Length: 321
Image (cartoon, rainbow, N blue to C red; front, side, top):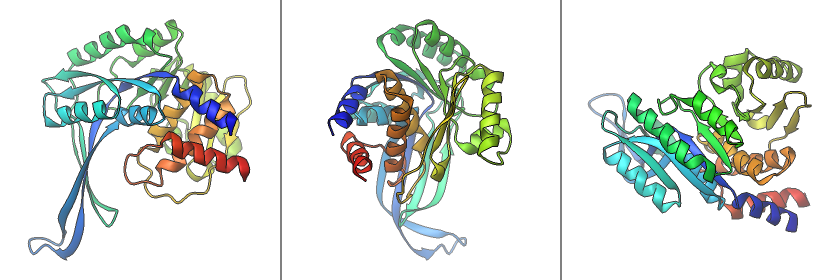
């Protein structure tokens, strides 16, 4: 118990700088009792609405939920969703350094649910201007030395237009930099300490994986090709596997838990890994903490977080089982 508490104290003592695409996650929830007379679609009587900070903001939420310190750099529009993100981030203890861009609108993902089943998702988005990306880099330069690690949360919404420069500066400053990737061009992430794709994202870059041996071979080839130091591939119900140049792969198995909603699980994984790396935890412990935290959030509705109390209970449960 003391060991678990000590390690949780260690990760809570970290300061992580998160840079990336932030969005507002909206949830409309209600009951469906009839079909519309206008078209063969359900009519939902909305009884509850919720707003949460998503994307890079959800990474930040996971860090502060585990009592770590987090600064979030991103771009929002001069609109109501942007103001909502500022308000929610402040309430959750996130130091939000948000560039206001009059040329863009804040990204919003609206989900309509009935009986905890998603009926519809509507996305509202456009890309920020070049000047906003320049301002993001400027804020980053000012703040990086005050933090222990960097997370670059890439949702391909335009905020990370200078990602190569962000990685280079992190390494120059001696900070580990972890990337949650998007797309198939991993050469953009050259020099990153760790990149954390899920299996489908990995296969889109490296090709379809036939078995565990094939996964290992493709991972090492990708590392050699891109200059990335480590790949952490999340494997859904099969856990996760960590590959590094010149080292043997490490694997942790998934823990049995009812899966309710997988959205945002990748945010949890990279948040916990960044904290654990900053705190000096071993790769095995870091993966176990991230794996356990991800198992907690997939049992919740929508983009969720794991609290320190929940993670402690999950880790202690494992130690006595």
